[in-house]
Amino acid sequence: MEAGKRAEAGGRAAEAAGPVFTLEEVGKRNSNRETWLVIHGRVYDVTRFLEEHPGGEEVLLEQAGRDATESFEDVGHSTDAREMLKQYYIGEIHPDDRKKGGSKDQNRTSSGQTSFWSTWLIPIFGALVIGLMYRYYVLDGRSS
Ligand code: HEM
Image (cartoon, rainbow, N blue to C red; front, top):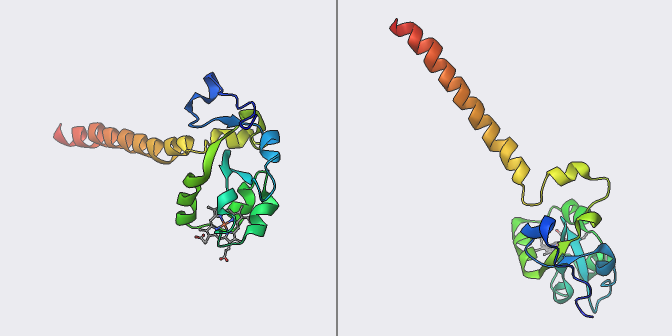
């Protein structure tokens, strides 16, 4: 019963690296004997980190069993802190339990794939089109 009904989520969540948990399941791990929290749709078991957390264990316990994304971001954690997250990663939150009312958020995947497209590929494509236009209109005009 330990891992509960950790739906191995075939299909949609196939890209997810770990098992999938519901918010309800995470909610049960809200004590200092078992402390789980959700950050950006990922589930972390921070039980053994409680005493080590530079911000103190109280803040972690306050967020235990729920989505701590906002408080985690509000603190402005360093890249080191973000790297540390990996050590405590145990799985993904079920897609139905991801931030409610966040259909906007769902476009922005946690791995930032959508922002990669809009940040890089669109400007690169734009530059290519402008380059080609320059070549055909300006350079061609000059040679004839
Ligand atoms: C697994 C999750 C977390 C990890 C790995 C983590 C890690 C860290 C680390 C390494 C620091 C030192 C400063 C830095 O490097 O940014 C820190 C500070 C802090 N963290 Fe976290 N943290 C986590 C979750 C949280 C959560 C959920 C809160 C909720 C409010 C929180 C609140 C704080 C606070 C208040 C500080 C102190 C900032 C200061 O005194 O300058 N942390 N944390």
